[in-house]
Length: 433
Image 1 (tube, rainbow, N blue to C red):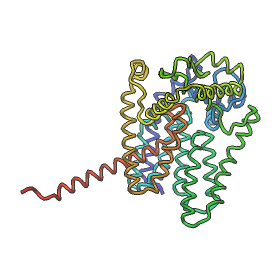
Image 2 (cartoon, rainbow, N blue to C red; image 1 turned 30 degrees about the horizontal axis):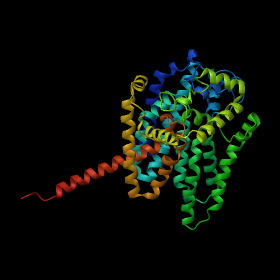
Image 3 (cartoon, helix red, strand yellow; image 1 turned 90 degrees about the vertical axis):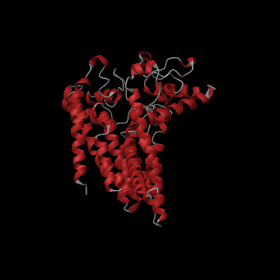
Image 4 (cartoon, helix red, strand yellow; image 1 turned 120 degrees about the vertical axis):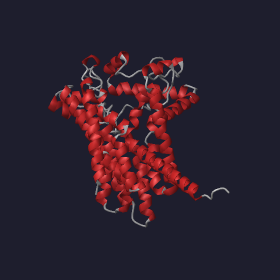
């Protein structure tokens, strides 16, 4: 059963997020920018759904069917639009309020995840840390995107992954696979962790001498069964096989040999590359070719870059920069960067501090309980791989922030234990004569 402090953490989390919502929701409906802050591509698709155009138009002009975004959050947002109006202030308030509620309820899987690995007291601390975690507050109370929904679903999947080896009930394994499939319909990248977490669970089942193959198969089949209807829809609408979304090669093309925003490290031959959302020429090309042909062109251009550009050391260096940014928040302290992002030094300090505490927690948990530590390492190791080679914004770290918090709590607790032991040793040490 949940302890009273966890319920209090949920209430506190929702209250602080709702307070932030009151100050932010009015800025979302901005017609001058085509309502981009109201969910960007997801908001435009939700508008199309609510207007009767189907799952289409990932950019502001009306266009054909799309698979550029996973479907779960746009359908959720379109339901709000249908009830409270498209791009209205009421819809903005309701959307951010529901995001905030989902983020607050995430205290529950954060607690259970930490309890399994660290014990009840650190688990309560982790739940309270999540309640007041700045990233969790900002990305739920200020941004219209799938962060809160994915975080709740994914952290719940992880809690089940920690414990699923303890049951042979086929329904439990089926439910876990189905939940992972639903989570992938919110954020496709989460699916990258399923093979590793499933392998760990099946290894522990087999090590106990219990049958494992059937339940592992059921988990995979359940995940595939959840994803199949959307894959069929994409094939019928676009004429190509797209399991969930189809924009990977666009991201790879723009963010590797192209000059990403405030990134001037690409070769001069790259020229200007941009997304249809912010590049009028690319938008005209997208509308003229249609999504399938447009993305096929980006696939071909990305492969040409990879095969014909000799600067593989450049790609390796750029990937390393993304990894550093993902875990420290540091990209550049150039004048242009600081002008555009004046709070970046503080962000670098904050993100780097959390990463340092996380690493201390990894060391502490690895020494005390390797079995509990390994699933967390799977999350922080496998999940970011897609973003290391495409787009490493801190936004996209949100699904694994609960794991970062649990490790950080473990790191702080280990430092506290060392401090106590050092104080005790000092008290017991004989006084010099």
